[in-house]
Image (cartoon, rainbow, N blue to C red; front, side, top):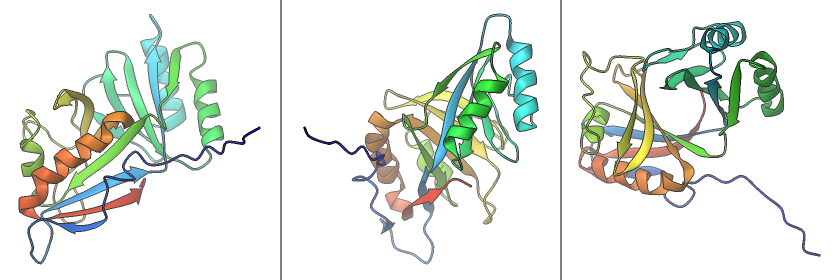
Length: 210
């Protein structure tokens, strides 16, 4: 009998080529990171249980669950609105079994959970020209007034559904955007983002969840 060893692999293991690409210059205009080692759970309130689900989220994460298109970040997790009465939990992976067990316990009876940890890919776009690169393939208005820190949207890129939200500005003072996509489309989306960034110079790498 053949023994199979299943190892989790990045959906970008072929597409992500670390290093500098595109235009030369002292600094890259765009920084791309695949954010790895995350726990990602979809939380969907059951009928009539939205308030109870929000209360459970506050108890576990110490922050109010988003009821409108936005992302909120606490000490242990970020909660991203993903539709009416539902949100996505993203947290650095420490002890996945314990993290999932805690969510199952606190949301018991109020919400249904779907573990998407290995079914999604999280790509972070930052740098002084990051917004310009995204504007080439997204129809969202990313101006500070229209899409401030904490804003989130369910949208599509080249017919691919994604969740996109804005983090706090980076240490360099420039906007930081997160794009969450199903793993089966991650390779294609990564190439789209890289191609859109080449004229500005792009630095690509993988990173652990912050």
